[in-house]
Length: 173
DNA sequence: ATTGTGATTGTTCAC
DNA sequence: GTGAACAATCACAAT
Image (cartoon, rainbow, N blue to C red; front, side, top):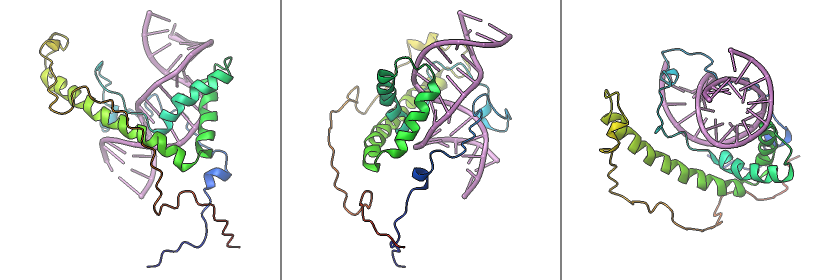
């Protein structure tokens, strides 16, 4: 096994603006089949934690701000999406990592919320009155309680052997 | 009044 | 392994 690392791989997505991403409507339940648990009846779960935003979404949040700042008259959400997506691919892997780190943290928080959410669900499983249990709904956080915000601004870019960003123009022509 | 739609990518879950 | 669904956002259309 040799580490075949002769040719430099060029991300095709960079060459191509965007694939014919016929996203179509991934919304609106394409196939509401009871077989899929996902298509289960959308219960009204006010406490249900939504999925944590991926690195791209975290980046988008900030990007939207910038985009709107320069395009205050743009009202198309798609405009930001397209612009954001394009820039996202144009961003350096190191830059993405910055948002990825945030996304990971967000995910950790998501699990925590799920913990509380699951408890509540179990507590008011068959009890139609889920709101009445609000008094007894007490989350026992053995772990950090509220100290979820830790200012750790560590930007260690010690790329040991990660060939993330090496511009070795190795034209293997 | 409420809810879907359009567009992006990443992540997640079910089969 | 694949694929479909869903996460935010915002103004507007439709019911």
